[in-house]
Length: 164
Image: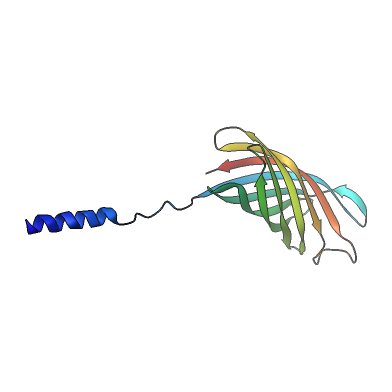
């Protein structure tokens, strides 16, 4: 009987132990966009370089409308350049998102500045969307700037976004 009571007390104690709570979950996504448009500065307007943007987005299930995105940038033509951007993205419902952050190019010379964008997301499946929208950047710092000139860039980009 003593053994039975001990077993019963042990079983009750195990059942009374606090269970680990369900932690917040991360909601990752990946994106690939191609864009081009206009850029300007001290010498008027010209066609902007064609840019490939490969991004990784991370949201939390407790606030899925807020995300951080880090992306690698490759300017494809007329000359190659490599950089990155870091953005805060705020979803405005299932089909629209606004973003703001910082952009920088590191190779072959440096350019840094703020950036902002708008995305229109057109669902293709439960997890994939076609994305299109404008993206604006202003380059105020860097070794690739002419003296006293600020370069701006306005792109129209489109691509694919996939939630994991």
